[in-house]
Figure 1 (cartoon, rainbow, N blue to C red):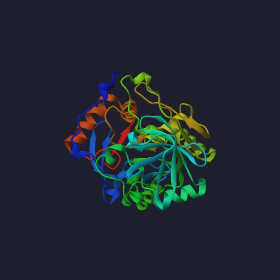
Figure 2 (cartoon, rainbow, N blue to C red; figure 1 turned 60 degrees about the horizontal axis):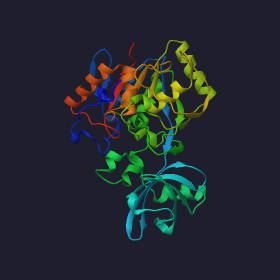
Figure 3 (cartoon, rainbow, N blue to C red; figure 1 turned 120 degrees about the vertical axis):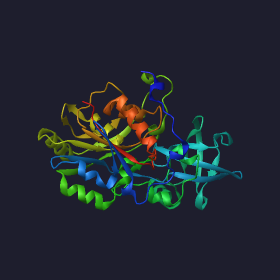
Figure 4 (cartoon, rainbow, N blue to C red; figure 1 turned 90 degrees about the vertical axis):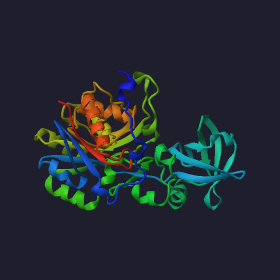
Length: 342
């Protein structure tokens, strides 16, 4: 496989920097034996009574902070907790920061740079314990939006609502499971009435979701992320499969977790651990039958994942169809409904 096979040209004006309003009226491209154009609020039309919808209930922590160092503005994105007060963080501009520096944050709180680990990244320690730090994030933090949005605008208070699913419950992510952003409570309720059930799982999304693939696909290593599927929910999914129903994964995070927990074709287990699964063409899918997902970046691990799921050639045609019809791309963009390539 050549990484260039997963490249495409996207007009910059199709990159969404704000969500559709209302969120449930986003456009949806259905990709099966042919293409169908509709809107997300008609999702239930494509579901059957024996199906199970699986959603990721992780909650994004607003860990994007604006600080000051010797009169210069420093942007701090804490992306992985190391212990109660230490985090791995991205710093920008990193060239202005050195080991031992103390970045002054809101309300005169401090993020000390313990050690720069690589260009743009460092271990930082806050002068707050875990509970007070989480309260600080909620009060003073902004959503850690994807880099391609932050290049065009800064994160603001609107994103606190916009970059969070309506069913977010368990704090732990630094990126939203963006396929879920299209749901409102009414759409969820309509789906709940029609199908066998809605199952909530948890995969805390880390910074690795934005990590580019460097040249060689086979050398790419995914960051590990913590996931959880209860025994009750695993049983519900297994019953669905055994009864001939379909499992619809809302987002690539949900799909990665479900396939990580697969025991064999059609069965999964209770899961409570890290996963660094890297799904690329040639992968054998055991659990997921249909995938709801946004449109992804060129040459990204997520584009490889959906190419493995729906078929590389079909994905190429679908993305060209979306571009030709002016769909909005990436985290705040429109959505696709992909059927597994048989």
